[in-house]
Amino acid sequence: MDAGIAAVLGAAVGLVGVLGGSWLQTLTQRRILADQDRRQLQQERLRQYVELLTAGRKVRYIALRTFEKLATSTVGEVDEILTTMSRAYYLIAITSPRQTVELAWTLRENTFDLWRLARDQPEAPRADWLAAVRLVRADADRFRLHIRAELSIAPTEPREAGEGDLEADPPEATSDSRSRS
Image 1: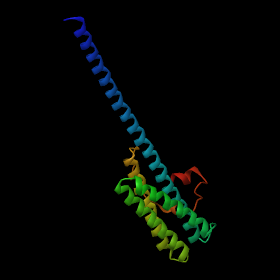
Image 2 (image 1 turned 90 degrees about the vertical axis):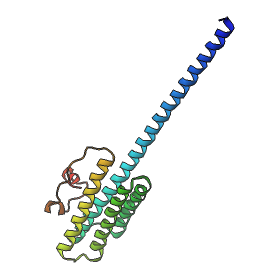
Image 3 (image 1 turned 135 degrees about the vertical axis):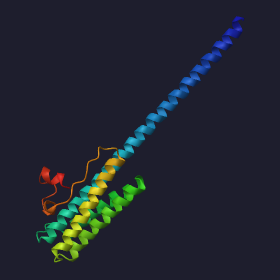
Image 4 (image 1 turned 180 degrees about the vertical axis):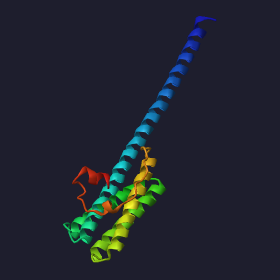
């Protein structure tokens, strides 16, 4: 084999190596970018899930205070919280799997119903508003457990809502109240 042919073969092998290496590097970069995009979307979803749950907890608290005739929030303040809850739901509806969207919708609608009951019928029988509060609390638990599984966060068993969940602690007053939200 003469030197010219060896040089051409060497160049061809080098070119194949460079192209193969570039191709592998591109694939790796695409995987890295896809993983980053997936993590970023997951973080954004988590923010919206927490926003929905937090707004729901605030409305539950305000509704309980209203039923107990200890209301301290104006209708405008509650409307702002409900708007935050709706915004979180809309972002969830755009970015989340169907089952998550359905659970978020149920939580949102039952929370709105609880507020309507508190606002429009503050003298409703205790059994009616306790049932509404328990329903919203159960919705929040179902949603929380579902998103833990969806986002691969260590799942735990839901605890049953008890009479203590019907106490009207301020949402950010104690760490104990946060654990009940």
